[in-house]
Image 1: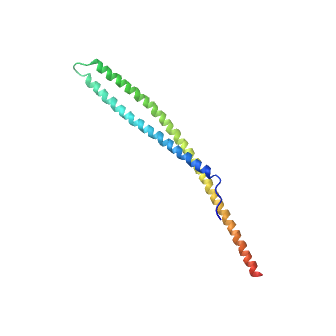
Image 2: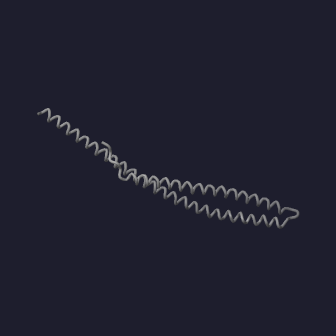
Image 3: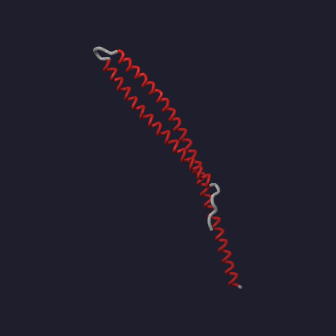
Length: 149
């Protein structure tokens, strides 16, 4: 005798798929934040290098004002990009928190469905065991009745 299938198997699979999607979403946002941090480090290094060049450039002797202004403008541009990246990093941090919360919820829902399925299987096994026990009792009763007669 086989166990009855769990009626909500499709829902269990759906919950697992949703949980897997939430994991994927979180991984993607975390990867984006990591890429952004790497870019920020590169820009920070470039800004530090440019500041060093500007300090050297304004040392004693003749100064090419146009080159100095160009370096200053480029530094301002890099600082602006760096500031925008700070804002984007904050937004990605908030998105990571949102994704984590969604993943925790999806995982909880998947575990609830798995527990329901386990309960169903346990109940079905108990029902099957009771049914088999009844059948064996009936067979035993028939054998006893046959021995008596």
